[in-house]
Length: 340
Image (tube, rainbow, N blue to C red):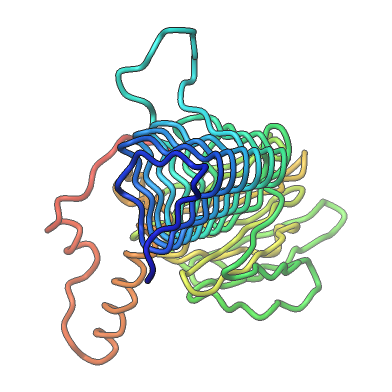
């Protein structure tokens, strides 16, 4: 690959510029900044010292990248997008260490978006033009508005929306291990009855339950996977959207009747969003609360999911593999406070 191109009207003080990178007129790069290969740094961009850019990053005109910023490969940053690095800025007052803001691989930041410090923009996420991002954005999410809220999910796996209602046929479930379990409602003059028993509408013996209600319509819950715990989600009232992701397939389900239970096995990433104002979601869990059972970082989930799939393949081929509980005990995982 060719040497970096530095426009004669740019000011590049850093020697850490990758091959094939282009730095255009009136851009200023401070001495300790690190820029990867094949990047495009457009006019009037300022890059401070404690900034690291990966490969193939595009930074459009009028963007300032401040200390503490980490930009991974293949990120797009639109014109005049604004990053911040001090939650309580005062003139002539400086932090000893600036909070780290991370933009993961493949994410896009729209024109004039503003990002508060110390957050993470997930892999392949998209921040809409003019959005004000106050909290971390999960992988593949599209956020817009002020404050930014999730409106949908995008590539690499477009989530199919499947409405699951009473009297409707199930959509084709592609996420491995996920099931839609029906339990009909019995109605008479005394009211309605809906019941589940272990082995009949309930695929495990519950160790605990919790209910979720009063969620603002723009709020997102979940955003994690479990290493061991199985869950059954039943929307008792109103409606809620659940996204299931096994690392290779993603599917979205709209739950709006207590007759349908959505079974989430271990090692499936789950997200709940788009709660109706009257929504009441019941979650039955196979295990007591254990903080070590949660995977809350999506890249970590993908890593563990690949290992889980390999172990499953070994077991199916007849090769001995330690059960998940034994593997956790050996690794020292376990414990945690009660609660959700």
